[in-house]
Amino acid sequence: MPLSEHEQRMLDEIESALYAEDPKFASSVTKQRVGRPTARRRLVAVLGFLAGLALLVGGLMVDVEVGGLRILSFIGFLVMFGSAAFGMFGPRGAAGSAAPARGGSSKAKPGKSSLSERMEQRFQRRFEQDDH
Image (cartoon, rainbow, N blue to C red):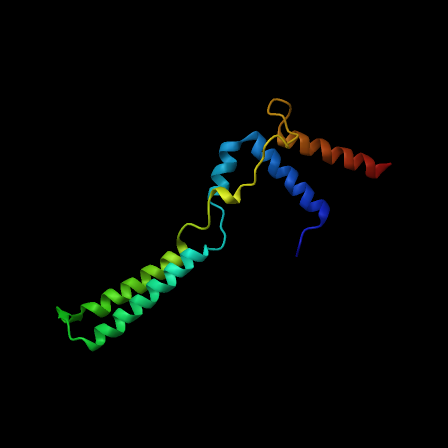
C-alpha cells in the first residue's frame, strides 16, 4: 500500500532530521539497507551456478574419485552452492546510492532542538488545531 502524500512528506522530514542530528548513525544504517542485487551480481551468480552444474554433471561422466568420492562432482556442488549464496546473501547495490543527498535543504539545526522535541511540538500543534 503506497504512502499518502502527507505521510511521504512526514517520512522525508523525519529522515532529513535523522541525517541532521546523527549523520554517523544514518550512514551506518543506509550502508546496511537491503535491496535488490545488482544486475552484475546476478549475472556472476548465474554463470557460477551454471559452471558448477557443468562440473557436477561432468564429474559423473569422468571417473575421478578420491576416497570413493567423485571429486569433480563435489567441487561442482560447492561452486553451485557458493554462487547461489553469493547471489542471495552478498552485499546489495551500492552502499552510497541508498543515501540521498542531504545538503543544506534540511531545516533542522543541530543545536536548536532534538527530533523528539520537534515531533512532540508538531503533534501538540495538530492536537490544538483539532480542538478549535
